[in-house]
Picture 1 (tube, rainbow, N blue to C red):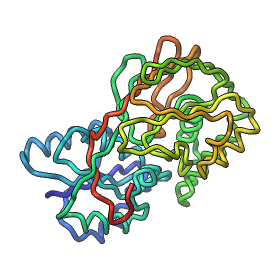
Picture 2 (cartoon, one colour):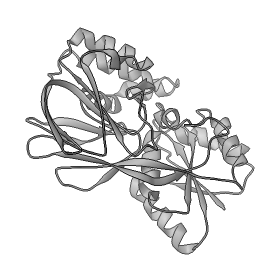
Picture 3 (tube, helix red, strand yellow):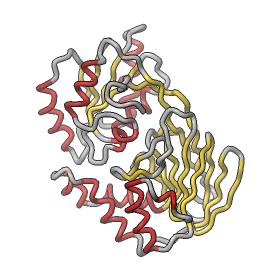
Picture 4 (tube, helix red, strand yellow):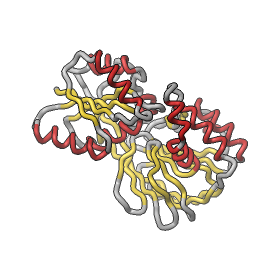
Length: 317
């Protein structure tokens, strides 16, 4: 069993690298290290490891944030002998929450070290999506269409996020952007199809397709979502006033928003979505494009497509 650490030095506005340099001094297990800047690097690294070491199993440990884990799982999905672990180093760390992984670096390392010789991996789902028939991409947390995608895009572009990250307060950017953008955002009409059943929705604020419960730095958007159940969970918010939207984003931290009459939930294996005007889409917090009448979003679950280290010692899913 070989252990590989893959570090994204740009995570958390480049603070991930500094954090890693301090953290690696305490690592006592044999390992190899790769620095990566682009998602394609991970697929290349994983492919080379498997080709050069036939029959060998690998721990691949991501060091960074949600984007880092998206890259690693996208690059390793389908490899039977690769097991995934995580050292949290981002600002939101919804991956750690949703997959019941230790959120502290040292607790995460202890779990990795203790399971080094007895991995007993757990098979997990990922989502696969495309826009307008274009290339397919994975998501491991969620994709969102509408207001939540707008917030994610504005937050990532904001200079304030970098400032807050210096004080480990990066996730506070989301409520700041939310309050500002809610005043000008116009709800939209959407047509969705879930497992072949089509619906037309009016005055939609956002639709989130989730593989696990959390997004936006701890908001429990899909309380019933599980990353191993073979389905995706939809959360649809429509017909909501701007002021009630503020209440929704408070209640979502506790998963109570689903009790509002303007919030609807669905489950499905295959989802299609389009709208009359260009509506932004995010995937695991990063801007992914727009949908309209000509560019449809198609998302589907890939059941058991990657393996995670068994973290049952920490907490069961």
